[in-house]
Image 1 (cartoon, rainbow, N blue to C red):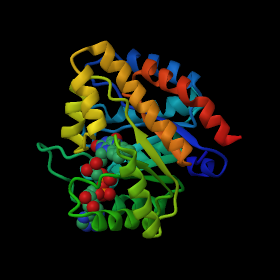
Image 2 (image 1 turned 90 degrees about the vertical axis):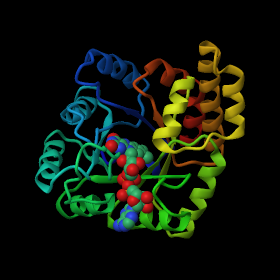
Image 3 (image 1 turned 120 degrees about the vertical axis):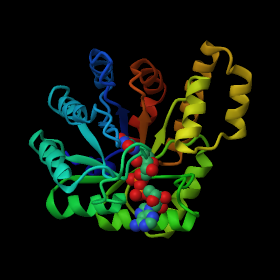
Image 4 (image 1 turned 180 degrees about the vertical axis):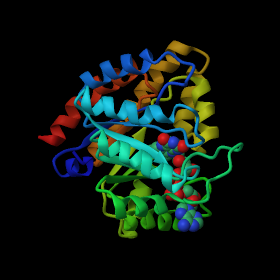
Length: 290
Ligand code: FAD
């Protein structure tokens, strides 16, 4: 099923997982999927290492297993900047053959040691390419705090509008820790005539190291409220874990009460964390659905 169809029925809940590193034990992701699938999210998306991090072929396999073994809709991420047209066709054909109907079309995270292929420069080009040749539900990424390479909010929203005009019919946000950034972004999007459903990306930040990594990788801001949490609990792993979960739940409750279209939980393949959050909020999601 195309996941964009779900938004008119209910608040959508999706999870994100990533393929294991080639050197890691594959059973880890399947153990996680076994547990995550019991929570019956509306869909599970699978990331793809843009720089060809040797586990990319796993994206299609895992997305296929989510759909065909666990019976949950899957979304395959597809970053374009390092792939040729032929590779794009191979991947998209393979997704189609496996019955996957949803693709998250991306530029991709930069990889300093690999030259861009040169065929696709930005996500909107891949979106157009897919729309002209295939029948996928095309999803795009968006950035409540503005993409780090965008010069300003206006240019950022214009890029997003280009992606929607090219064929994206659903959006998922980068993680954010201050809901006000999301609400301001929603307003900008609406003013720009972007009317497709937007899922809010929430990542439970449960340890000090992952916060530092996220700030560096995604360029997200730490709001004072969260900074205080780290100051108080950052050196106590158990307390920091609990505080990170509570913070994510607080964000989700606020978003749901404000009528958000959907919640996309960056699970980091940690089913226990996802379960704790799910258990705290699922009745709120059902209420909205009902
Ligand atoms: P775009 O929308 O193409 O924008 C990138 C930048 O270029 C922006 O600053 C934009 O304003 C600018 N821009 C866009 N179009 C033009 C244009 N025509 N001319 C000039 N400037 C332009 N990365 C991965 O490698 N693998 C993943 O699986 C993955 N999953 C993700 C999932 C989500 C939900 C999100 C939010 C991000 C994900 N990323 C992933 C990271 C993403 O690839 C990076 O953030 C990347 O830098 C931007 O990708 P994009 O598709 O949003 O880019």
